[in-house]
Length: 191
Image (tube, rainbow, N blue to C red):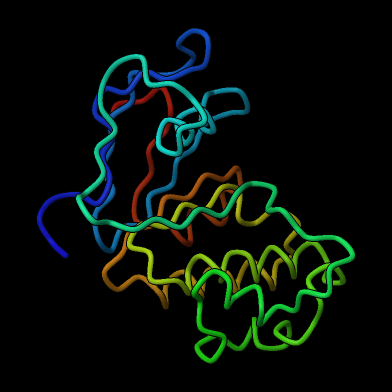
């Protein structure tokens, strides 16, 4: 797929009962890893909600390339408790091939997801998105619960899976942003 951005925010003002953030303008193109940054309460999640439908767009436009597919890793991914779902099965549900899993994920494939550490579960949840066929991947605080070696593995996953897609990352982890993103959009600053 080609022809313009995969995703574009054009002067978007978003909120819930009333506007909370904006206007914001940025684009996500194939090959981009765009970091969306700002302090707590700046409206990062509200801007993501303008795309997913959990917040309201008061003005402007959220453009999605026709036919583009999306995968979203939430800030706090839902983990089935007391369900004997293995990592391999979780990947099957999301369309991420277990056979293509990188070395950092392979040891997690046969483990029950309810028995993984927070960082291990976060890593497999991120791979569930990055290993899918989605052209737009949204990662909301992907380094939560991760130790430095898991963050290194995440950066490798990210860079190895960029062909034909764009990734929008929301995070407070400045070290991760410096190593993983191609460019940044800071709330309150011009695009």
